[in-house]
Structure formats: C-alpha cells, structure tokens
Image (cartoon, rainbow over all chains, first blue to last red; front, side, top):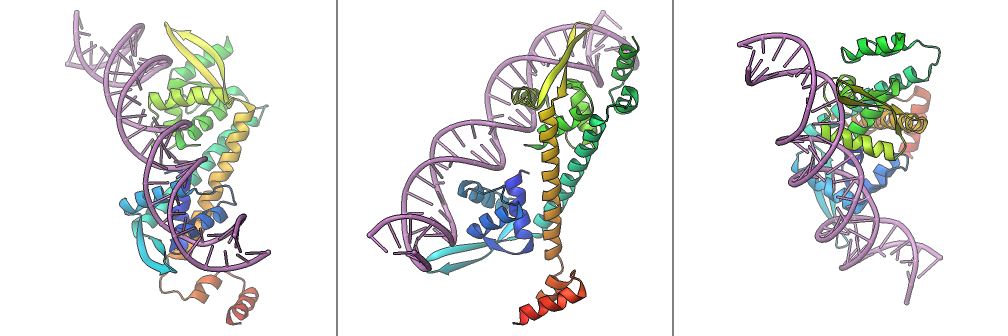
Length: 130
Length: 130
DNA sequence: CCTCGATAGTACGGTTGACGATATATTTCG
DNA sequence: CGAAATATATCGTCAACCGTACTATCGAGG
C-alpha cells in the first residue's frame, strides 16, 4: 500500500468524509507534505471501494452538487491497523540499522556477524584478517 | 519511496552488501514478508546509484562470478533517516485516528474528552456547551 | 553421472498505482 | 464581473515493482 492510499484510510478512520474533505484531511494529517490530486484520490477511492476497504456512507445533493461520503469498513480498519504496525516496524528497524552505521569505534566483527549469509561471513572474516 | 527501496537502504545502512546478500538481508529485516525479486532489486540498485543514495563499494570475482558490493552514501543515510521518521509519524497518526473510531457506544463528549486531564476537560466541556 | 538447490547477476515484458493536466459546474467574496 | 474555493471526473503518462526466464558455478544427493 502506498502513502496516498494509506492516508486516505487514515483520514476515514475517524469519520466519513467526501472527496474534497479528504484532500484537506490528508494534507492536515501529513503535516502538509501530501497534497492529493484529484486523479490520485478518485482512483484510490474506486480501488478501495472495489477491495471492500471503504464503503459509500451516503450521498448528499447540496445546491445541485453531489457530495459522496465514504466510510472505513471493518476490514478497512483492520487493514489500516496492520499496515500501521508494519510501518512502525520498518521505521524501527531502519533506525536501528542506522545506529550500527554511525559508531566508528565498533569492531567490524561485532557489527556484521549474526545475520550475514553463511559462508560470506567466513570469507569476509578471512579477508579482514588477511 | 516504496517499501522494497526503503528496505534496500535499510540493509545497506549497517554494511556494504552485494545483490544476493541484499535479497537475504531484506527478507530477514522484514521478518520474511518482503522477498525481493531480481527485477526489483537490480532496478532499485541502478536507480539509487543514479540518485546518489548508494555507491559501488567494490567488485569481487569469486569463482568466476562477479560480486558487486554497494554501500550507503552519506546522502543515502540522511534520506533513510528522514524516511524512517516519516513512517513513524504516519504510523502514529493512523493509530491515533483508529482509536477515535473504535468505540461505538461512546458519546461525542466522552470520545473527545476521554483522554484529557480533568481540569482541561472541564474547560473544553464549557466551550462545547457554549 | 546427473539433477537439484543455493549462489549470483542480467534482461524483458506486464501491471499497478500515483501523478499532472484538464474539463465541468456552482457558490462566495471582493 | 472575475477570481478563488468547492466538488467530481477522465485521460495519458510514468515510476516502481513483479514474474519469469536465461546464464553460470558449485556441492549434495539420488
């Protein structure tokens, strides 16, 4: 799932919204760094509806203009929760890897071993000692 | 930036790796749920090199097979850090939005004020009644 | 001996999803 | 009267990812 899609679900988690409202909600929730384009939004809305992650809540005609409100379905809420946890894990892992990088006084062996492909670890150790 | 790309940078943050090593490192770092395909990997590697986020560390010929090691550049490390923070924020926002949703029997006031310190909650309640 | 799986890289075609541009229509405000 | 905000929709394009297949070496097992 990409960022725009994720943010659409995030916005709909709190309450039903219509297209234009979503554009603003997403901008707000992302601190202004994701500004949904119409093409992205309505594409995502159609796709998510088809996937059953969101549903049409109701339609309203205000002054001849249609407002179509979407709401998050139960399976959409579940999907969002799973996805949020996933992002959390990815962020944590990346930060922990970055910490391994910075520290200059750390020995290579202590840093690298443990998850290196077998054989490669042995080879590398030999290279270092050579 | 998509997940595979993000995980490639994450894997390279700790130490230089070659293509095949990256496939395994990414699988491990993602708890097995992202298994990079050759097409994805080498496409990403070329793209990231062009963008200056990674660099070729060195090349090795082992048994007639080429091993090309890549390392994370300084700007790549910066980009990864920024991206990781971004994911963290997205995850947090999504989880907070989901919390607002769940409880259906909760009144508006109780939902909105539930987490506020008592004194502040009374203030807000007055504002609402006004 | 020969196949299978792991290691290692390259090439190509297809699909998805996001994006920019554009069209349309109404209300509100200066 | 025109600009900006509100509101939905469509089109073509492109980046990124995916599957698959091809090349190649090596060790293990049948």
